[in-house]
Image (cartoon, rainbow, N blue to C red; front, side, top):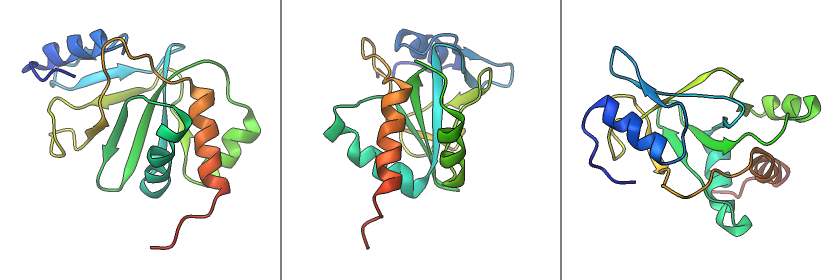
Length: 153
């Protein structure tokens, strides 16, 4: 992602060019990605998100990942490819994992690095010409992380 954007409007335009359709700036200056039938989000607690991020390259899965430090949460942006089964949603919720509801919004950072006014940063930023990973494939990686116990520290 090129860091030439300075205003919220420029950040929104850059995000649209990186495959995040509908991204726009709001009057207070936040940049919003509306979730839709094209783009959705998977939110995880930090520990599960760490495991998902570590497993993604092994599964040849790449895509934008937002991190929030306090409380530690990850947001994985995905291409919405089908409705998630209710049983899967129920299991995910027990672990604190949710898929962003249709017509919800994700606030995107207007800066690079771990300190932004939105209190979130790109662990892996969106890139032009790099498609979002399908929701179903990302949920398979999340499920694999839930089935495997965490490694002792």
